[in-house]
Length: 160
Image 1 (cartoon, one colour):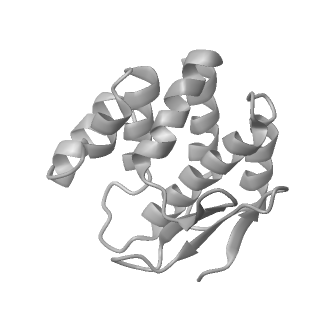
Image 2: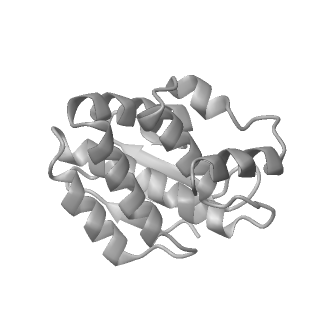
């Protein structure tokens, strides 16, 4: 379960490993930080910044493109798609890293035993940050303490 999902040209990589609750914890290795489990707020901050540079529609559209292709397995086709869309970002390596991290997070959600919302929980956060301009820290904490049916309603309000 700890196989590398995607390796990048600088030696960084994304993989699944054992976390506090299951074997679906997403890890990112970079030369500067080593191996760690990134928090939602980190990639939310990145995508919030990029949406101001490129446009919210473009960044959210790229995310939705990945979201629509996501199921319970890691797909080489989706990884290639991520590398392709990342080439339009100012730093294509960092864009690809964060898109692969959130992609792996959605695959993990699709595989979690008791997760009812599955990958929609990641889409809710990305929508809040990119489209609604909610602060990344508020979006990252939004679901904490809420029941699944409350969050389901939030997703349905946004048509997903």
